[in-house]
Amino acid sequence: MKTYYRGKRAAFYNQTWKTFSARTLTETCASIDLTQLQQTLSVQKHAPRILDTACGTGLLLQRLGQLIPDAALYGVDKSQDMLAQAHLLLQNDPRIHLTRAELTSEKLAGLPYEAAFFDVITCTNTFHYLDNPVAVIRGLAALLSPQGQLIIEDYARRTFPFPWRAFEWFIKRIDPQHMQAYTLTEAQALCQAAGLQITATKNFSIDRLWKGWALRGITNA
Ligand SMILES: C[S@@+](CC[C@H](N)C(=O)[O-])C[C@H]1O[C@@H](n2cnc3c(N)ncnc32)[C@H](O)[C@@H]1O
Image (cartoon, rainbow, N blue to C red):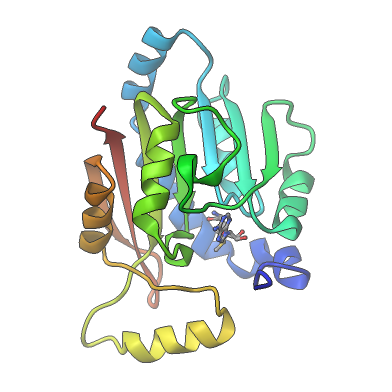
């Protein structure tokens, strides 16, 4: 199936979703435990390695580069056109490595990296696309270094009286790759089923229509 994120949709993504991205990526950055990261690095003795999965146009990588200036930053996305936008945004930054790759249910989430390589992994506004979220989380957890952090953020399925079923039907008409949106409680259960220990959670409001959640997990290993 062709990705929704191609052509003009990719070229105008940042403009179309400006307020949404600003809000959700701010909440994502605030979910990273920087104190824990420093502790992890004092043991590991290397520059922080951060992976943004489904990085889209690179907006979060740009923020992460400002938040953690000495980090090596990796981004993967399955859309060539979204990655092209990320290249435009981040082109002069030697810390950033972009690769076309797809999150799958396979070992290491199907990504081309060594196990236990990353200190922080992020996944924003993409969880609703995963057809087997437990397998993907398990794969991402295997990419985390000991005490590494996985931060997942997405828009939330809204509950009654919001007419979510009709709304989600409409989303699927526009973007057939949309699988389903979750509440924070449901997302937590999926992470726990994948063996992740949840260390922080929050619900937040994006705007009058969209609500979001974010969580941080560490591996139990
Ligand atoms: C709503 S955009 C979010 C982009 C970025 N994470 C952000 O928050 O600005 C969703 C992104 O997920 C990517 N995507 C969807 N499913 C994917 C998968 N299985 N593997 C990799 N990328 C995926 C799309 O190509 C798109 O760039």
